[in-house]
Image (cartoon, rainbow, N blue to C red; front, side, top):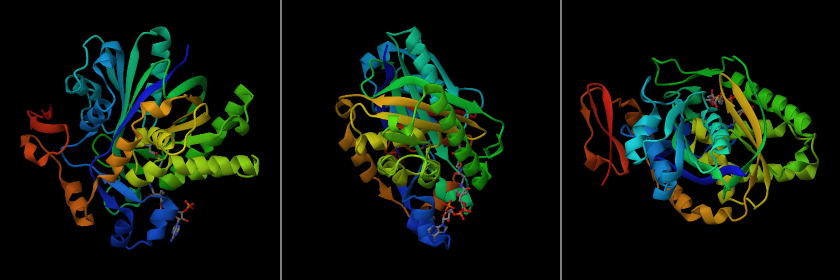
Length: 384
Ligand code: CAA
């Protein structure tokens, strides 16, 4: 049975900052941020937006009533959850009008969460072929103002509906994975911002890719010639480039040129959005689908979550995928955002809603928003 991604949706906050303006304000050569790090814009979430509201928006963009009837499970991958106990998935039940007879929960393992969700969904659908699984990746990447990681922030959500006979991407059931206790990136429960050993995280990421690629080749008797595209976890776009470069000189020049060209298409959206943490790999997939993917291409996908878990798996782009993806709507969503100043971004960054907050709905332009914090409970609403 073929199983994989039947639909894929995306949400990005409407405000962004320009990375050149950020560089100038931080007294950094803009080329360091645009070329050295590889970013152009960074999404800025507003205080009434969080993992719940963004997750609701990306899922709402793809779900029909028919899909909801067929749903067996909802899995949310996030490392930006709003509660230490109640899952983001539970909040989404009424926002999305989901049926009660499903399993709904959250997975956390840094940027690997959504891939854990995707692989769990694969298993679930193989045992329950008539059911669908909704997997949502939703995160706000925060390192703090004036930190080295600031240029690698971002926010947004990707939702994927997993089913049999998928119309977008078939998972080939070829996968290798590994886990190690590594201190490259962490966010203790008391902190709103992440801590990272940035350069070390790059080294571990590349090391995981090399180890897994060697394992994959051995396990499946595969070579780079079996793939026309490699998609990477891209917290910032230079990071995937570093992994891809390890293949230079090890594969033919033609293959390396093809992989590099396709990689450039896969990072277009990320350059304009920034870090989605666990959604980053899947934003890369979406960017590639919109910018040059071809039916029946075999792709290799590298998922990495600090701490650290890595997984390398293969998939096939399905014939007719263009009909399932609203390319123009995605491009419009990115183009119709508004640039805010670095001053405004810094002000927004400092706002933290506490207990007894009531959000004025006239300040909200999204369908889903945090409406109130009462008795320390977050209450969400959907615009009529
Ligand atoms: N023109 C062009 N390029 C320039 C330049 C200039 N004027 N000046 C510098 N550069 C280049 C450098 O040569 C360097 O390139 P390479 O990486 O290819 O060597 C690049 O710009 C960055 O320069 P530095 O290394 O000097 O930058 P930095 O010290 O400010 O640190 C960083 C960069 C480590 C990425 C930092 O931004 C950081 O710590 N980010 C957060 C950590 C992170 O994003 N880790 C990602 C993996 S973890 C993850 O994904 C999270 C998860 O699982 C949740």
